[in-house]
Each structure stands twice: as structure tokens, then as C-alpha cells.
Length: 132
Ligand code: HEC
Image (cartoon, rainbow, N blue to C red; front, side):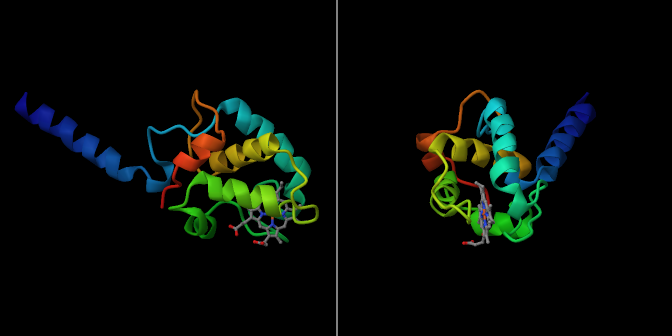
């Protein structure tokens, strides 16, 4: 009995250690619908320069180590504002905020952050810090 409890405790510790910091287990960031809408919008407006799999071409990769290094430790708001003001690079500032928010949700989903019940909006984007 004593030993099996100890084993459960140790495996819980091992699982906690195994989950990557960036995934920030337990937290939710956007709704599944936002990420789905964002996927379509991304393919129409962003993928020509960032590739449909976000690995980058004319524009840099929007997932992976370099991307996470650049945005980690900042609120989602910073990423959202950059996209809203500077992208798409061939027509900056042309996209409605809701569309950019959905695209941001999609980019977060591709970087391992989880969907949940609460939509990503400007207030939550300010409060949610991207994990380092
Ligand atoms: C015409 C090509 C082009 C299109 C279309 C485009 N981008 Fe970009 N994007 C770039 C280039 C070039 C850069 C790098 C320049 C810079 O950082 O100012 C960039 C940089 C970025 C970055 C910063 C990446 C980093 O970590 O430095 C983000 C985020 C981004 N784009 C998102 C988007 C989104 C979202 C869309 C669609 C709404 C989009 N881009 C459409 C060319 C493009």
C-alpha cells in the first residue's frame, strides 16, 4: 500500500516534468471555433508568405524555437498588435480585428497552446502571457 502510493506520486512528478513549458498545461487560450476560422483566414491571407504549415518562406516561421523565443514572456496582445498593424506585409492593417484575433488563435494552436470555453479577445490577450 505504502509503496504503490509512492509510485503514483513519483509517476505524477515524472508526467509534470515531461510536459513542455510552452504548452502551459491546464490553461486555455481561445475557442476551437476561433482556431478553425483562423485556419481558413490564415490560408487565404498569410500562408503565401509563411507557408500553410507555418514553417516560413518569404516571412519567418510562425512556430518553433525562434518564434517562441521572440514572443515568449510577452502578452498575446503584442503578437496580435504586430499582426494587426504590420501584416499582411503586402497590405498592412487591412484585416478586421476579429479576423486577426482568430488567426492569432490558430497560430497559438499550432504552437501547442490549448483551446477552451473562453474566446480570445483583446482583454484576455492583454492578460495572457505567452510562456517562455
Ligand atoms: C507578402 C508576404 C507576407 C504576408 C502575406 C504575410 N506576412 Fe507576416 N511577415 C512577412 C515578413 C517579410 C515578415 C518579417 C518582417 C517583420 O518582422 O517585420 C513577417 C513577419 C510576421 C510575424 C512576426 C514573426 C516573428 O516572429 O518575427 C508575424 C507574427 C506575422 N508575420 C504574421 C502574419 C499574419 C498573421 C499574416 C496574415 C494576416 C501575415 N503575416 C501575412 C511577410 C508576410
